[in-house]
Image 1 (cartoon, one colour):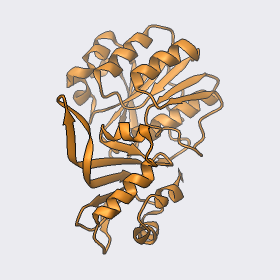
Image 2 (spheres, one colour):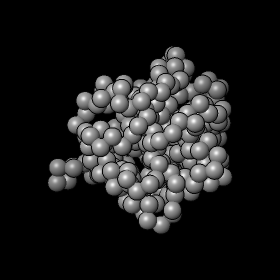
Image 3 (tube, helix red, strand yellow):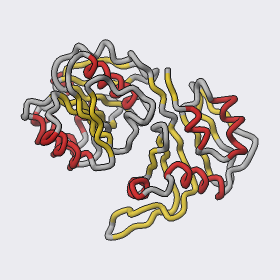
Length: 278
C-alpha cells in the first residue's frame, strides 16, 4: 500500500495534524470536517471523533491550501470537489451559487469530506488478462479508482500503450507509478480529453474515471468503434443499479463494454460479462 500521507497532513490545520497522523496513518479512509462539530475520522470499520471543534478558519485553510488558488481547482469546485496534492479528493458542501439554473460554485463551505487516496499495486492482476473493454462499478468510496489505477499499470506494463484522461488529477498524482507505456492527460473534461487522446496519441487503450454525464457517454461511444480498448468506472451499487440508470442506456444499447468488475463492501471485486447484467 502506498499513500501520499505527508501531502494529506500538509493541507490540514496544524492543530489537527498530530492526532490525524496518530489515529489514521494506516487505516484512515475519510476525514470529515463539519463547521462547529468535532472532526470525524472514518477508519476501517469504525469512526473516531477528535476532541476539538471545526471552525470556519479550519475549513478555509483546507480549501485554500489544497487548491493553491488555482483556476482549475476553482472550476472543479463548482462541481463540488477539489483534488488535493497526492490525489486526495475533497468534497465540498455549503451554500451554493446558482447561475442560469446550474451550480457555479460554493460560496461558503460548511462541510468537507476528505477522501484519502491509497495505492495498492497488484490488486488488478487477475483483471489484466480479461480481453475487451472493461467497466468498473461500485458505490462512492468502494475502491473503483484504486482498482482502475492498478489495471492501467498492469495493461501498460504488459505492452499496451494507454492514454489516461485524468480529469481531476486523482488517478496518477505525483509520486504514483503510472506504468511504462502510460500517458496522462489532465485539466480538461473527459469528453474533450477522449477526443484529443484518440486523435493525437495513437493509444491502444484509453482509460477514464467516473462516467457521470451524457457527454461522457457520447464521447465513449465515439471512441468505441475506433479500434481502441476502453477502461472506465461508473457509480452504481450493483449491475441492476447500472442498467436502470437512463444516462447509461446508450452504452448498454451499443454494447460498448463486454466486461464489468463489481466492487464489493470489503473492497474486493468480482468479474461478470456485461451481457449477464442486461
